[in-house]
Amino acid sequence: MKRAIAGWVAVVLFGALPSPSVAAEAFHLAIEAAKTGELPAGWSMAKTGEGPGGVWGVVEDATTPGGKALAQTSDQGPNPLFCLCVADGTSFKDLDLTVSFKAVAGKLDQGGGPVWRYKDANNYYVARMNPLEDNYRVYKVVNGKRTQLGSADVKRPAGEWHVLRVVHKNDQIQCYLGDRLYLDVKDDTLGGAGKVGLWTKADAQTRFAGLRLTTAAPSLQQSSEDQLPTTPAGQSWKLVWQDEFDGDQLDTTKWTPRPDGKRKGGWWSQKAIGVDGKGNLVIKTFMDGDKPTDGCITTQGKFEHSFGYYVARVQFQSQPGHWSAFWITGPGVGKVGDGARDGCEIDI
Image (cartoon, rainbow, N blue to C red):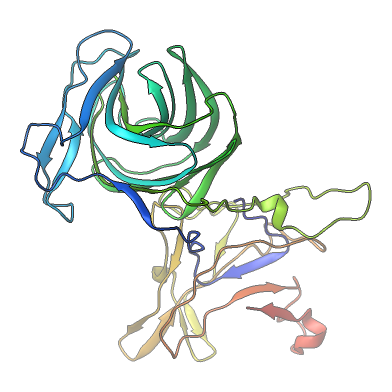
């Protein structure tokens, strides 16, 4: 969902909405009893394309809750090769699937993701995130030909675990990274039920864990357009400004941090402001000696707009005693000294 923000804005905490609730679990990747170097029971390897590579097996990984992961371990795959590992006894149509992945290595490619509605090695859907290319994409593979259905620019580091989620209901496919919806597409090419599995490309050496899915009425999130109010006849909303907080640094062409100094009830500090590399702006509260300290950023002087609709995902602290806010205020605030004449502020 895009975050369209108009006016100048001060954001104190930026997070993500909770993901939609899911029904009872229908399938999960069980590797606790599997031996290192072997496939879990009921899983098999396959390839789309020809060439060496595509070697799957269970590996020890202390960073997973169970201490094991299912991995593609070969570094020999050529660029056109898609490496598959499929749960043979599965058959699902509409589903809500999550899986954690960690990109370990790969010169040609990295990352990977789940496959579903898998008919055979040449016909299936796949959603994959690639830290080497900084993108997240969903494809259909039909008769061995891969066709892109949607793409989003996303930066996530290799060597760390990330959670992918796919919700497919009828012809609508929504793909999440963490709790955030990045891809929302429609395609009805591959109807009916199919197997689920895992996918990598070329020489990507990737680990997977925690694959789980449900099937009972997957919940689709509304797109940002559906959540906007109804416009007058003949008019429509236009996105005029946004920030997805991608990367690991604040975009200072859009935002200005408040300078360090005293504020009402505490102190501002730019040390409190950061971007976590996962699409979130995080502003912390801490004690600097005896000074309660936090931070603030604004679009003042960089983006100011009189009318519009403001959309943001904000997660505030659960502890008492904080004074966090999402502000919309006039550009003249503080110049007169009377809030009502300065332009007021709207706080959440």
